[in-house]
Structure formats: C-alpha cells, structure tokens
Image 1 (cartoon, helix red, strand yellow):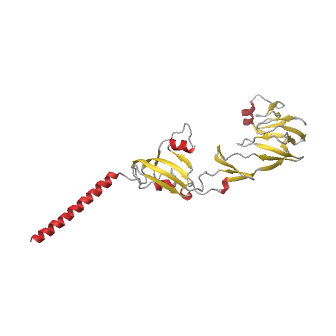
Image 2 (spheres, rainbow, N blue to C red):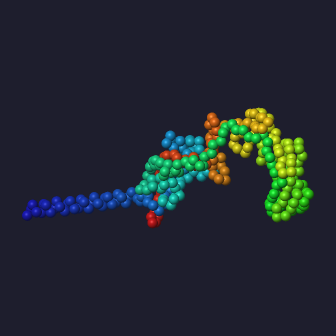
Image 3 (cartoon, rainbow, N blue to C red):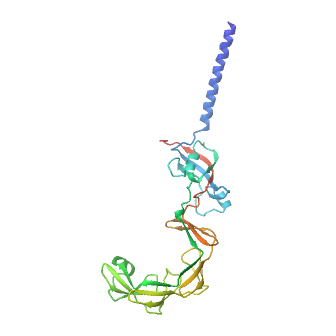
Length: 298
C-alpha cells in the first residue's frame, strides 16, 4: 500500500512539474512580446551597405556623417512601413518576419529580391571623341500653331512683322497667319547669330528658296558645354567636320525629370545608366525593430 502511495505521489509530482514548465514557457513567450507578421506596422532603424561595406543609406545621422553621405535638411529617423504592403523590396519585407521589438539582425539580400538585374536597354554609351558636321541646314520656313505663337510673341502682330525667336538673336518674318503661323528666317549670308540651345555662335553661309545653311563658329582649343555636367573641347576642324573630345569627370548622378542617370567615364566612352545604382547588387542591411503595431495579416 505504501508502495502504491509512493508511486502516486511520484506521478502527481511529475504532472505538477510539467504544468509548471508549461506555465513558465507561456510566461516566457508572453514576456518576449509579439513578433513581426505580414500586415504589421513596424518602426525600424536601418543601415544599408554593399558587400564591400560601403554605406549607401541609413536612418542614423552619425553613420551618414561617417560615411560621407550626410544631407543637411534630410530627416534622419526610423523607417515606418507595413510589412507585406509592397512598399519595401521583397528581401526586406520577408527578412523582418519573426523579429521582435528590440531585436537586431543583418539581412543579406540578393539582387532578385532587391532591385533586380540591370536593364541593358536603359544604358547608353557614347564615344569620348566624336566627329560632328561643321555645318547645319535649317528649313527657311518654320511653322507654329497660332496658339503657340501667341504664347511666345503676343497677339499684336500681322503678316510682314518681324519677331525675335525666343532665347536667340534670330529675327524671323511673319509670312502667313491663320491656325498655323509661318515664319521665315530674316537673315543674310555672312550674318551671325547666337542661340541658348547652341554652345557657339552660328554664321549664315548660304540661303536658297527652302533652306538656310549655317556654319559653327569654333576654333581648335575652344571649350564648350552642351548642358551636361562635363565640358567638351574642340580638338580638330576640317572643311566638313569638327572633332570634339568630352572631358572626363568623376562618376556622378544627374537628376532628371525621367529619373536619376549615373554618368561614368572610361578610356573610350561615356556611359549613361538610367538603372538604379543598386540594380544587380547584393545588399546588406543592419536593422533593428523599434516597435511593432499589430495589423490585419489578411
């Protein structure tokens, strides 16, 4: 009988121990707090690097200063986003899943889960040294919609009046007015003019019933700018062509209405790359989850 009581007591003790362990596990898990799931809103500090350790972005102003990336006026603050909403690159969305508040992690994200491969159709290459014709031929008559003419010159003109082409010293004569306004170059052979869309002056060398031929007024050694971050030197002139050399500059990014363009010079040419500078690259992010706001996973 005593042996039975001893066995029962031992069995009860095991049950109580198991219950205590389960309770401790529950309390421990509950103390750890929630983990990141799809649909949650997270606040996160981050630093993005390339595989060689070069920092390209961060939410930490001190890291930005140390990396030479600091932009005055930019708010350096934690990133807030909804996990799985598509706002972030795939590798970030999936990489933070399961993380807890206060947890730090390093995410290594391959190109296919980051900005994808570089698109070769968005890359143009131009020669460092190029030849262009020394002369251009322009139509003698220029057509312009009446509304555009009015916006450019006003409405107080009539046939036979002379107007100056915007941004230039070119005089043009109105030869016809209607829904379309016809303008004729009011130029003589030997006359020169300037235009803001041309880096040099032009000289009229011939005129016929349909066209005006102009010659670029350049000399060897002239340095011009074509509205680009680099300048260009005239290195040779013949009767028909001029040879120009684009002068290299360090790699830079040009901001345009169509997005940023990375400019790179090498020994033979200029590469203009409209791909994201992170395209085709493996990215490394050091992240820390600061807060989690539970959302609707669905």
